[in-house]
Image (cartoon, one colour):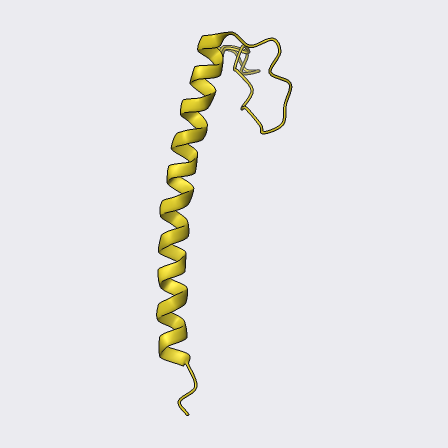
Length: 66
């Protein structure tokens, strides 16, 4: 084990980011990205629903009574 931590692989793939150039990617790499983005969209949708429910519950509790 090295003191400088150069035992770890340096060839990590950078994280995909929306809008980046896709020209150099293969069909399988594009498929991987599509799957990654689809799972991220599903995760975000679940979180959004949860937050929306929490906001609606808070509004119901603190709504002005007229």
